[in-house]
Each structure stands twice: as structure tokens, then as C-alpha cells.
Length: 163
Image (cartoon, rainbow, N blue to C red; front, side):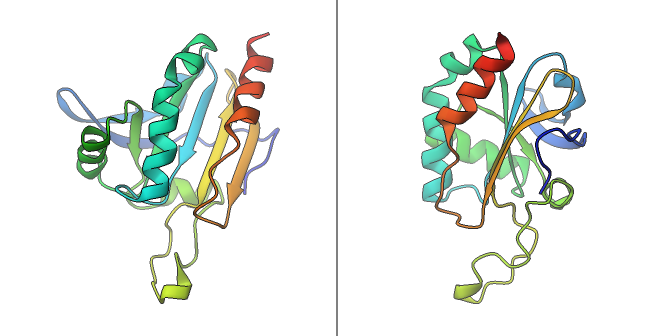
């Protein structure tokens, strides 16, 4: 997994905007802190709980000048349907081929192997805070897909970056 102090790899992924699919990059958000939230899969209970919670606290992140991008291996169309159904108001990026999860070092070799599933490349539930210069200032990842990131620590890091 990438760690604090490393340069965050840029990416060019697809998001679904008001006018249809378009590209989104990390580099277009440089100049402000960015929080990358990797979630395993759309329409799952823990992922929904996490992103709905973040949506409910968006005013706090906005007051800290932070941009939030949620990444999963789902298609941008599935992400948009999930967001609409659950009221998630975040920017999504589709890591459909799992390249970004692999580059950040947070891809499962086999997701939920105890259920004999072979879904390699699925991102582990992870969070990265990237500063305005593209340097990772906070990194957290868990092998346990039910463990939600420590959002109090994430907010504390964003406060530190703002001051």
C-alpha cells in the first residue's frame, strides 16, 4: 500500500456527469486537498453506510476545502444508479479494470475467499488524503471489508492541511 509522504499516482477514470460519461483525473483536483475513498462494491450495505455518512457530512469537508472522490470497480452507470437510489452526493470514479486499486496497493487478490469468490482486483476499503501538491498525507486500508475508515482522523488531517 502507498504510504504517507509518497506522491499519489494520477489516474484517468470515467465518471458519469450531467451530460454523460466523462473523464476524471486526480491531477485536475490538485491545488486543494483530495480524499480518495475506495469501496469494494456498489449496492452493498457497508459501502452504502460509509458513503451516505460522508454525504451527510459534506458541509464539513467543504468547509475544509476538500474534494472527495469515491472509487470502486463498478461501471459509472452502476455507480450513478446506486448514488441516485441511496442519495449519495459524492463524485464517483469508475476503476472498472482495477488498475488504480492495484497501483495504490489496495486490491484484493481474492475478495471474500471464505465464500469461494474469485473476484481479484476489488479494492479494499481504503482512504487516502492527498494534499494540494499531490502528496499522500493520510493512508488507511483494511483487509476487513466491514471496517469503515477513521473519518475523525481524516478530518483532523484536513484541518491540519488547512492551517
